[in-house]
Length: 274
Ligand code: SAH
Image 1 (cartoon, rainbow, N blue to C red):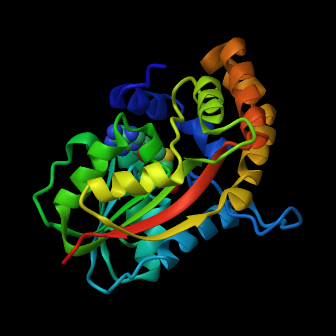
Image 2 (tube, helix red, strand yellow; image 1 turned 90 degrees about the vertical axis):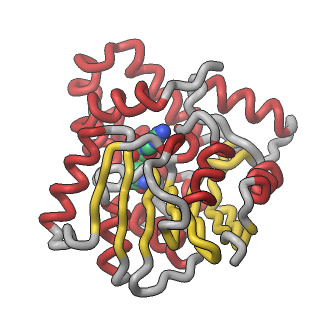
Image 3 (spheres, rainbow, N blue to C red; image 1 turned 180 degrees about the horizontal axis):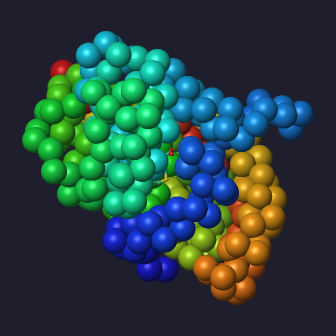
């Protein structure tokens, strides 16, 4: 199935920024719930996922971090609040870049945070110019993960680190391939997922050494249910934008994903050899 191009992804994020605010909030990524009885808010659960990923990394004062697919800047603001680091965020959505910048100014962090419109497939940065490359729930959108990982290796200094939060294919009763096909079909090609071993091999082929890999599927799965509930409540606002048919498809997709055993989620880190 044909994946949307980076420009199409950017146009989608630009066009639906208000709806996305209401659907996901300021973090455009999944939440982390301890278990079914955990009643933490969506915002707190999403911040928790940011913190979990950051907790798998060594972050030193003065580090320069590249945020690939920065959304409206909430993870960057959270990271820069917790650590005295400099962050450059890139997004394929110009509207997100403007909003991330405005939000960094409001947070009093504009001296250490900057955002720019760029395609992660073609990073406009010199070699060895970052200590950390961070990609939270963005690589699945990009046409070629392996290519983006090679780009990350290029812009990292030796000894630099990579942090990834991404969807990951889980073995299901009918096998890997059937699960991958279901996810690909239900998402219309947006969620192309691969299994853990394939992911780790791709990280190695990009010239990186895998460090941590944590399967958090059980903890992020409630996000699909909650997204479905919120989206259902947005019907009146969403239908004029995307039409009835697309609305129903999207809602059905959230529901299908919440029950799809093959669709998992992983936090991964790696380092570039010194
Ligand atoms: N990491 C953010 C946003 C996740 S949403 C957060 O957790 O809040 C996915 C992000 O990836 C969006 O910002 C989208 O614009 C960005 N993205 C998708 N494809 C991209 C590409 N080819 N280059 C740069 N950014 C891209």
